[in-house]
Length: 486
Image (cartoon, rainbow, N blue to C red; front, top):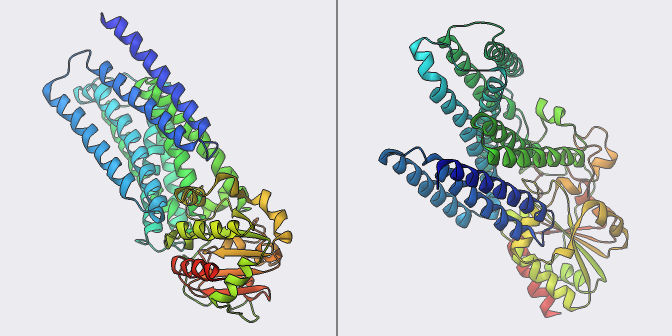
């Protein structure tokens, strides 16, 4: 088979892989088919990698390059498999953010490597780089977006891990520096694009220095952009950086002429942008407002009664079990505390017990509950909670008024009634789960500490609320035992 036929087959393989990506993304629309969607997308990636290896080996690949190819596949595949198998559900947001960093960084390096491979030797020889306006645009866009994603995602991951404090970190003169970096990066981009189009003329070495300057500006910009953003906005930031990663990968596809990268990047970029917009709307905040500097001081240990007023009513495990066991309808509201305690299996066991007694049980899922998009859905799916029981906020909110008991496990800010009534609150206007409208409320919580937004929650002093102070996992185990004893 000649090289031309092999090239055609490789392109067909790329198209097949791209089709599998689209099908896989479509299957991820539903929790019931999400796992199948992951497998379909993974199959597309296997086809893409195999086709690319065939493509690059047509011109002959030396032993050293084979070592790089096989070593890279083994190292990356091995690390990915180990991380996926060992990561705790509480660490999933950090892992997603790290993967964003890897994707953005790899895309930026691909553009730099392509520039060096095609143009670097001309630059070093003092010749004119073989650039054009469009190709230069894709290179500079890839380098800037990929680099911003790389450092921004690392900072976001460090915030989620607790390596960097969760509250907004304001560097003296940081916003001015951020704007200067943005202006400098755009200026360098315009100069390079004009040079590539032949509108202006520069020494080849100057173009290389400009590209490196753009790289440096973007790397610093990623840090200064994410540091001032508070922990409460991290789910939106992760989604936004995911969109950046996809865009950088698509730009890399244009740089190297790879249709697979273009399709995969466009899918990730578009879906990430849509999700970011939806999540920002769910918090009643604009994306621009989030990027200027979000709210959120990290999960605090201070009392949540500073300004809420009222009296906290504590309930025993027996009292809580009686309320649950003799209810007709129960809505469970999971939050990050459930994930931290790894209590998803306990909540499923409690729900099964209640259902066996003929009680209607469902789960209220807020769009930004947890630390990443879909965090609660993934957590509960791990415990094999039936998909129909997972109800989104708009669907479940009208049912709280007909609910006998709302069981809140580790959720704080997404149940805070101040979002509806307190105009001075930073979360005012954010759609919340209408837990306070249930006939009775049980909150499983370790202490009266504040949530990630760092503000008081009047729900805890609501006369209908009973506070069951316990770690989510231990508390649910005690509730299961108490319900069984009735």
